[in-house]
Length: 111
Length: 118
Image (cartoon, rainbow over all chains, first blue to last red; front, side, top):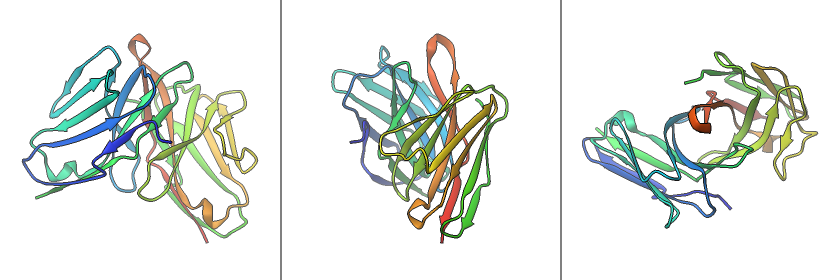
């Protein structure tokens, strides 16, 4: 099964609103990353949060990590139509550096 | 971040033919590259880890004789889908791993290759 599970699977909001996506995972991790994918394109790395961090900011993005609950959230503030994309969390760890991706959240920001 | 290119960006082929996809790390030397497959509206599934100068490591359930990986240089890895069938139609994405500070593990992804097998 997928290591990461995002919810909601799909989210539709109006421009200017905030969007929150959640990710849960099952095993212990070294870090958790969030990626964005525009339709039919590759992935763009957004932010990495290490297992000893609880919160991280990057521009309009805010990521939290709760290792006790094995969950993370990605908040996009003041959303724009250009934020429309799929967002994936990915957990990584160990010497093999492999990433395991969640199922993703499709975010639609309506102008 | 690192820039990764893929070629071709899309390919249509007949069933039974082989297709080669290239993944290039343009500004970093990548001893390790990863190949993923993504079916429509689904997540990325890791297929294999490509190691420069050695054999690739395949994930469980991925046929190594069907998906040939060659990582002959520090900037190029290739994935060849041999005897392609319609069920191999998918979006193939590669990434390279760049080690940053304190051992953080960050991957930079190529733009993907859309394979359609008729």
